[in-house]
Image 1 (spheres, rainbow, N blue to C red):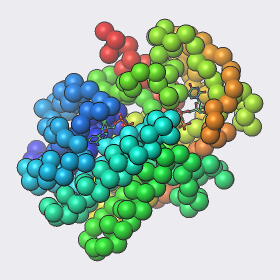
Image 2: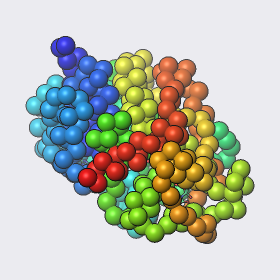
Image 3: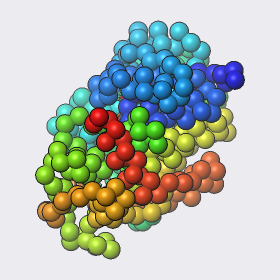
Length: 336
Ligand code: NAD
Ligand code: UDP
């Protein structure tokens, strides 16, 4: 089948980008990855190719490098950009706010300048539910007040505002910011998934490491939250569902100016819901201990996912059992 055109995926070798690349290819586009591998491994590119069934091109570059970005756009006409490149560790962003601004915000400025130079007018951006700050009401819909509670969240807000201005400056620019809730899981092939460097900050990769015996137990951040079992509640979404969301957004970009859309399931699941499902589905033990709350955490955050359904015809298909099964299959396969 002839390609429908090339799509540049910044951060395409990352956890989410690698899954988006697979879905982009499945929809008949040619994904072109662009990554500096600061938080991912080069081997991911070949594994994406294995899933797709053909080699996938990857440009090794930093989005902050204007010359490299010009070379990337000069090498192939790009129909659109899916902009996933970014640093995402909340704790690190508190320690290094300038790095986060430079990488995420300035990097996006450089990217947009290169897109302008080559007449690329379409972008899907990896935003986050962090732009809502502390939840003031649940479920969280797109009209929820915005506000950053850490430097990482500030970068996402700054970029959304930048994209407002970019879209406003020209009638035929089209942007969709997808506000992800909590992406977890892995591709069913177990060839691509989440493999954070060092001790993970997020729940699912931490649970995986405990199940593998690499960490002794999960510290549950608080057992006295006002939730159904006292532990924190989040909206976990399977990364393959999330990746499909990018393709439907891409397909409908031309009817958008700058639309901001939640990608979540709409269901709130607790830490213990995740732990118990992981143990039941995978037949492994996840020792845990309830400890103090983590500073800056919310009791609960979950999406009103109805706009994605109305606007994109998208809804999550996979559930918690799929998420924990696929996360474990990837972890155990990549351990071989
Ligand atoms: P990831 O760290 O696995 O992937 C990010 C990729 O971007 C990596 O491959 C990294 O090497 C690359 N990158 C970073 N800075 C770069 C730069 N300056 N130039 C080129 N490449 C660069 O993270 P992920 O989970 O796949 O996240 C992808 C995007 O989604 C990020 O923008 C993140 O903020 C956003 N997001 C992630 C989550 C989540 O929980 N995973 C939630 C909401 C939003
Ligand atoms: N959590 C936990 N122990 C951990 C990591 C996370 O109890 O080691 C809890 C955390 O308090 C929250 C949920 O798991 O209720 C999801 O946390 P994560 O950091 O993955 O996502 P975020 O809080 O950024 O939505």
